[in-house]
Amino acid sequence: MQTDKILVSANGTGWDQALEEAGKFASYVGLDKKAAMRVRLMTEEALGLIEAIAGDFNAEYRIESDKDCAVRLYLKAKTDMDFAKRKELIAASSDKKNAAARGIMGKIRQVIENAMYSVDEVGTLSAEYGGMPLMYGSMGMYETDPVSAMGTANYMWSLDTYKGSVESSIDKDEAAKEAWDELEKSIIASIADDVKVGVSGNTVELVIEKKKF
Image 1 (cartoon, rainbow, N blue to C red):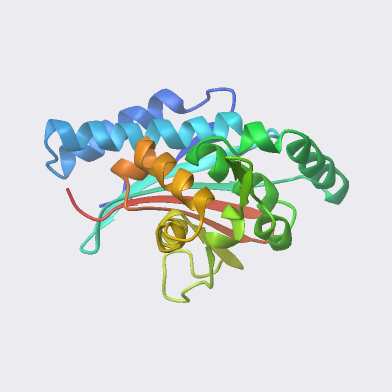
Image 2 (spheres, rainbow, N blue to C red):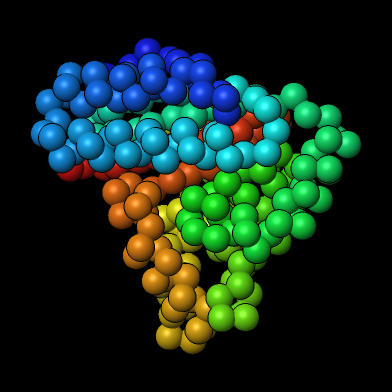
């Protein structure tokens, strides 16, 4: 099942339609009230990212489900920034990196913003926990699976991969301990199985997945 595609933007255009579509999706696939609320929360978190990302651009929103995934929420955006504008954006993000990196959604937002510039910029992203840096950009990156829904992406960043990296570092890294606490308090990390960011040229795609309810 796949919903209609809706154009959403940072100024709020399409938000009401997207939330309405999330409700229709939940009803169509027979989700109970609790699961339907989670789908709405996933949509709200995704729309919040669009609002927070630097630069003015539109994104295509849709939800689908199949035998492998109960809910797969997509946001796909094409950027129209030239090299100079991207460099300026990254410089602005760097100046605010401590604020931008607070919380999981803040980190995902910064991954998307820096992905508009280059893969290397994402790999160098870090946040401080107790005065110690944690390289959350590189910890969430992995090679693209050519048969995945985002197989055309040049590279991927995954919340699930990041969570696995953090968990494996808890015993030997104090920063990882704090990062894990942050993950446990995160709304999106608690309701979604994975959040992926894929980049191909000037196209950035966000996918939020919930395997089953």
